[in-house]
Length: 307
Image (cartoon, rainbow, N blue to C red; front, side, top):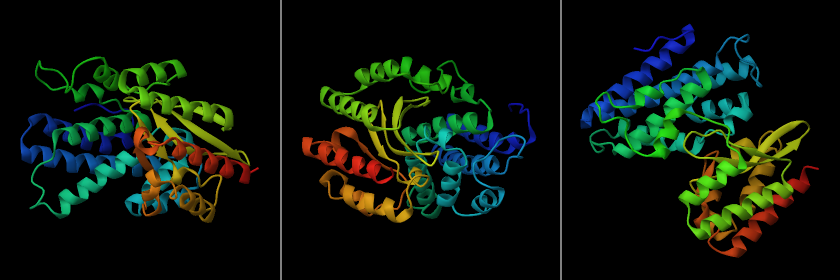
């Protein structure tokens, strides 16, 4: 069991470490248990972060808001995490967290019907949980991702080694080098178009710190508060950050922006999602040139409305 430096690190660390141990055992029951405990670990580390002593971390929302969110439901918890430290949250794939949490709910509430967890889902959540623990509570369980045997960690090659080593600040050059390795020619063109559009029109192009993929984010600033409109990842993901616009737009304005985007055929499902993040592969989101042009138009209207 890893030794922790501060008392508030112990609970989440023990849960995630316990889950990793069962993941490596490989049986169906162990996988189901590992997945359930990973989800508890992630939820616990978020609640722990929100209730850290004031002298440990300077939150951007007050104690009452944080305490209420820590006692609330999972979406409220995620919203508070985003608002408590927007810069840190900008690089967190919240849509992935929601996906894994929904899968956990299915496993928990329909246990007789869901009898096996695909290994790629378990491995994905394990990597994400370890990254979150390191980012929010400063505990590094990366070595625990490796199997105890000589076969090493799941996966091989430079990509997996980079994921295990931890988060880093990506540069433009690093990002596009990764893009060229992972995406096809059409997707590369789309990513380049989105980057140039961001460079020309955003208040800031914010490069990410992801362990698995690089990213850049279109940032707008209003009254000294920054909000993210969309992010593009080197694995081809394109995310509209509805939940992170609240610093620069009110709920009605965000819903109006959502409705306009929903008129783009490839983005139509954004009208019915209740998630804070809407993610598609960029090749799907911009499968036709006119979809890109309409998207740019709506983002520029959003930008011009906050001047």
